[in-house]
Amino acid sequence: MPFKCGQCDREFSSETGLVQHNSDKHGIGKESKQEKKEAEQQIRREKKESELEKSLHAKKTKRIAKFGIAILVVIGLAYFAISLIPPSPVSKLREGLGPVGSQHIHSDVKLYLNGVPVDFSVSKYQVNPSRQHVHMEGGDGDVVHVHATGVKTGFFFSTLGITFNPTCVVMDTGKRFCSNENNTLKFYVNNEPNNEYEMYVMKSTDRILVSYGNETNLTSQLDSVTTKAQGIDRGQVAVRPH
Image 1: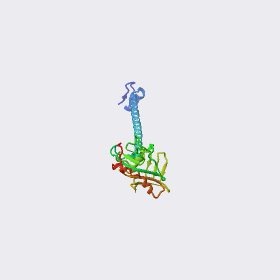
Image 2: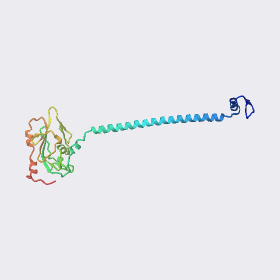
Image 3: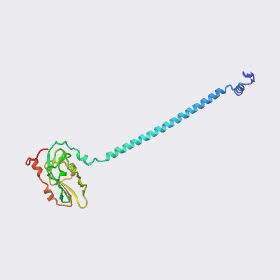
Image 4: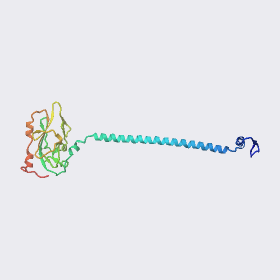
């Protein structure tokens, strides 16, 4: 059975020949092939774009993740570093410090540097508005007035601008007196060596000696610490309230 072209009446022995003829001579069927080709190309483009978009998204996510991890690491290291920083001397000395007026007691104090006593009777060491918790007053350089609970010797000295710890005394002038092979820093409370140094909490009628130097016999320095606080706290010496 012959296959006849509807456009030019030409006959073909097979359907394949007719289809090829229509495509070559009359363009029949080319549109569908072209559309199919374009559709396939569009699918490939969309697939490629989708893969590219996924790749870019993955890279972006990876960068964000790396950035986030880096931030967390930095924060963690900063927190760890901060945790290793010891509290400042003053903040440590203020731990346990009660409010002004929580008590009113007195102690006697002497500070010797290379055998010479520091004169606390001078005005710069006397009471002022910033020294409400603890101070010296009235031109007396022997008696410390303690107006709060938990006052440590180191805190008292810090109010005078003096740093005091187990190894050094640093005066308000900046001059340092630190233990070495020739000189040592000693701390006595009531004629007895005490290893609490700046962390010692001052008590009523304490007789406190801080001594820096090469002396091996501190008898004269210990004897120089007055007993004025005993008279005040025992009511034997009148003192105006603060």
